[in-house]
Image 1 (cartoon, rainbow, N blue to C red):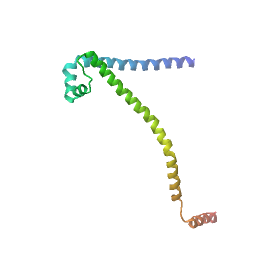
Image 2: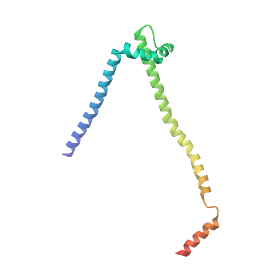
Image 3: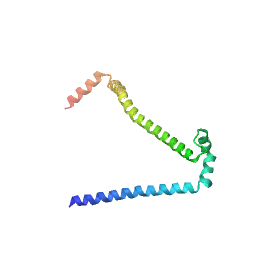
Image 4: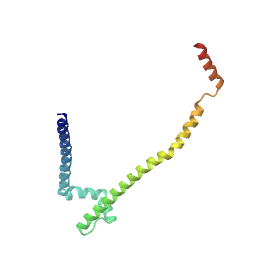
Length: 136
């Protein structure tokens, strides 16, 4: 009985999750259609005004053949994505390594500061212990 309840609960969870994915996919498709529809009137002049078209032309992304331009833009985006993932991968390796290498320095620092934080007058410390014993 409880197993059936959990099965129905899991089915609802999967339905809600897939509905959210479907909605974001639908919004993505609508945005692509809108960008293609308004490319010459809104997006191309905007990109030309901020200098993206000139930059893309300088680095060789724009060619006479539109198919070659699409391929070059796709390759450029893939290179940026792979570079980003490599940098993130290196960061996940470097940060734990730095923590491991910093551990001895942190321990030495804590030992040094703990030695300086102790009372320097042992006689005063012993007197306070003796007065505590006498009060009992």
